[in-house]
Length: 108
Length: 462
Image (tube, rainbow over all chains, first blue to last red; front, side, top):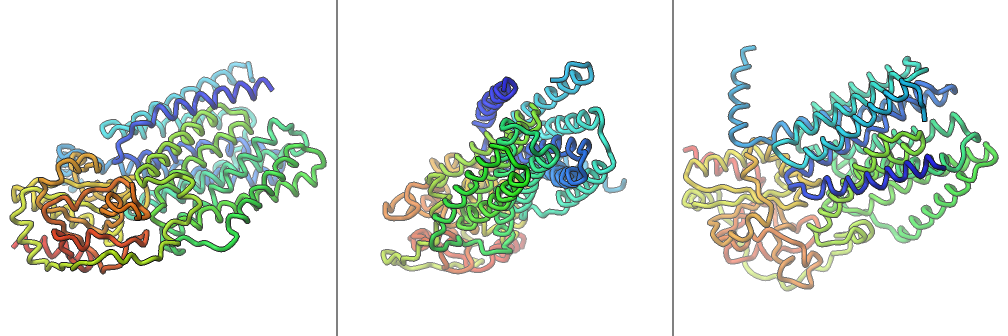
């Protein structure tokens, strides 16, 4: 019971923290913020790993492994896609630098 | 709680991971730091995974299989997806997070069954319920966005009653389940929860129209966080609770921003099947539609010294973002000031248009929110509306009887001349007529947006 109260305490504080963190995001960044936070929600992978790795019953391991697959897609896909998007969100100066680098790298 | 030293190190590492998530999310809210923020957040995830793998008594055989399969699918999907298909990709990833939380809850229940107390059974129920709704809800959103199923609201009689009854059933089942007792009965009730929550996910998203998808995606994003949070209570893991609730909170804030940008309540978005009922033809709209040719459009743009480009979902459909940027560059070379005005709900997910224009290499400083361009709109020579409709509809500002009255819009009609690039005179997604098309200063450039803009670009190059 004490553990539950302790965890609930953490829950409430984190929710407030979340509200404070995100309250001022320019709308330009809404998509990366969403897909980036979506990747974070893949943290459930921790639970999936525990089930797949410590399950005594075979079916538990099956469920856990499936959970690992889905959560990993969420995590890996989410972070990569967010990075791909943010790479494009440059200022003019950064963009010309990037294009210079790219043309420079063409030979290699 | 474990008191030995390895347990202590694990707990410390989880704290480090949580801190990296928090800093990462903070940095995601500014353009200059966003990319590094995402990197830090992924580092946090890596730490959490490695630390979990290092905990005692792990059998790695199936974990490795799961990690490899998941990483391959995730990496390939993330690389292959076109920027125009980003909304459905995000929806899909989101759904996978939801089903993972459901499976974690299920696995924990299956492993321990009647040894569990209410303190664990209730979180299992919540994780399964929210995870299931997130999963099938996201799949339906994916289907709508990828146009595998109709983007129109799907309504049937008794829909609300059925939803309410299913909700009651699932809550009752949850109560019986959490009370514990006979294992066979518990398992039966548990399966009821699994199935009903998945049905609920489908039923809550099908009545929502494509134009409302930015709200739905943000909300489902929030749900996936809450499901992870519930899974955290199941396995008593703090890092799941912290990061899950961070995501839950951020999703709710985005949902609120989207609702505000449409001047509608969340309730209204979720339950009204907006657009399905609006079939009344407004008779008040009279006036002449003035079409314009590509040649004439070029002549006017060539003389303009200030241009605002307002894209909408139609630009994504026509894949016109690259040629639009080319036009913008040519106009700038011609000594014209070019700005892009983007409505928060233009497109099918929050910030959809920004992503497309960024992909086409439009500089961040040229992208403006409605408030950034509206005050100076009467100084603008030409406003080019590309595939946007409801977000530039003056009825939202002037016509109290309009269903979208009160929604903040981009005041394109205040520019000296407005070009509207459109396939035909069909009304927009919400099915509302747009008086903008009949205005004195509006010129309609009919046809495929990409072809029209390419035509103008070709003229500039001559």
